[in-house]
Amino acid sequence: MRLLKAISNLFHFNRTNWKAVALCFFAAGVFWFFNALNKTYSTNIRFPIQFEYDQDRYIATRALPEHVTVNVNGSGWDLFRKRFALKEPALVIPVERPSENMKLPGAVLVPPLSTQLPDIKINFVVTDTLFVPIDQRESYTFSLYADLSQLSFREGHGRIGPVVLSANQVKLTGPKHILHQLPDSIALAPRGEDVTTRFSEAVPLVVDYSVSEPERVTVSFDVGRVTTSALPVVNEVRVRPGQKVAVEYAPQTIGVQTPADEPLPATPARLVIDCRKLPTGRHRLLPSVRALPASFQVTSVDSVTVLITF
Image (cartoon, rainbow, N blue to C red; front, side, top):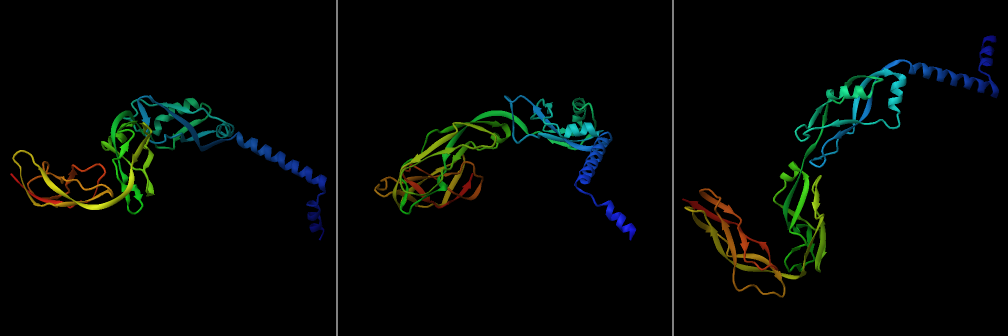
């Protein structure tokens, strides 16, 4: 019973005693913290990096790495300063011929990191390989055309005039491999719903990591009431020297959308059947339509069947 009372008295403090106990705990914590900082530790730290290259000749195709993870040994004091430093100067990595050196082994960073971090030992770079997506900067000119597939018109309405672009070409400056993958002509796809009146929209030219001149191109055309008709056509077969072509089937008319107040032309449109690149044999292909008024749109055309011999 006396033992229990003694234990109870040990943990029974008044307000003054609690202040003293808290001060003792704080002093012990500070002592332990400073003692721990005097020991040597092994840990991983993230170190800022910056790639240096000729930005007039080269361009990044993705965001470049901004940090590298490094395993280090050092005293608690040094590691504490490195981890909680307000602004650690980045390691500048010069890259020569960056389009030819897309990968950088992490091991090559150990010597420059050791120079920049003299107070700690660099064991190894945890990031095994750094990918440096940099390509040559080039400029190319592309032609433009309008793709109206994203537009919808109110029933009985449609385009009744030619499509006019504020610029027929665009100059793109960007990564070489991205520009080389683009087609010779770039589509401008304006968007709209339930269109009934003249349409005009500035369409932005967006290509990854590239700058366009101009940045926007205006697509405009007249809109009005339209009707659908069947327009007669004549065949125009194009062949190469020595090639013989027999047209086994070709449509006599095509479906067209025309302005409601405009009559069909007196002369038929031309159905061009281009066989110059086709080998011997029977082929089915989609012809192109020529000699069509600018206010007309082809709504349907059948494919043709040809037999090619030499």
